[in-house]
Length: 155
Length: 167
Image 1 (cartoon, each protein chain N blue to C red):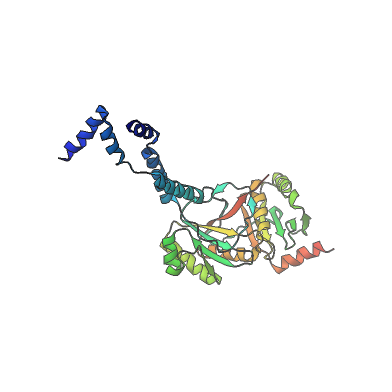
Image 2 (cartoon, rainbow over the protein chains, first blue to last red):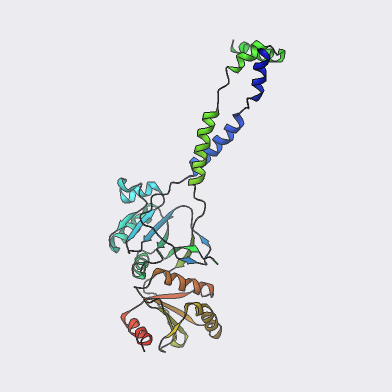
């Protein structure tokens, strides 16, 4: 009876170190993760050979969809709440009706966080017209440096 | 008090008394469900973490809206992208000539070698897809033309290009 108990004991593996490591990994991923908000429109990026990486944080994205609707989004949830109101804080971006609204939002965003980098994310099939208007607005609000999001060209 | 209690089983283990060993066994908690949950969460966060950031093209625009540069006409290469995704080029006031997209890069390299002072002006039709503008800018970058102008495509340009496209 007693001998049998001892035999079972040796099968038992000490899981404590494994749990330690797992917990460490878990905390790491939980702290570093940033939930991607639901995309407001499906965007197929154009491709280019440019290899500049998109900055990781402090990004303000102007999305131009294929049916030339314009969305403005920022990556920080706190800033989204301040900019677009608490109702829209969890959304990726808000639909911008016209260029005056876009200009006002851009200026407001820049005053709330001066480190914001501006990127234009246009669908490859979007007409150039709205893109040109957006670039004019950017120039008007003195955002003279911005990036165009592209995919890396294959082949 | 507590120390005395802690000390007793430790000595007992060395003595290897079966009764004491069974009492230690009760202290062990089965961690398997916890490990299950933790592993599940790890997998979830590992899968949802975004590692690949997209590529970008950087554009620096002149800060003043009215910034003008005087360019002699002979040094001005105009590239027009029409709504039919066709590319037209001309130098100075020549009438535009059509160009295949595949020929654009060799053409640009040839022209810039022939005249290093060449200034490129890009005009993209509002109706043409955004992709063609990115493609042309990409070709310009690949041809080491890092400075170029973007100008609006006017009705005048459309007439000019249509005149060439439909002979």
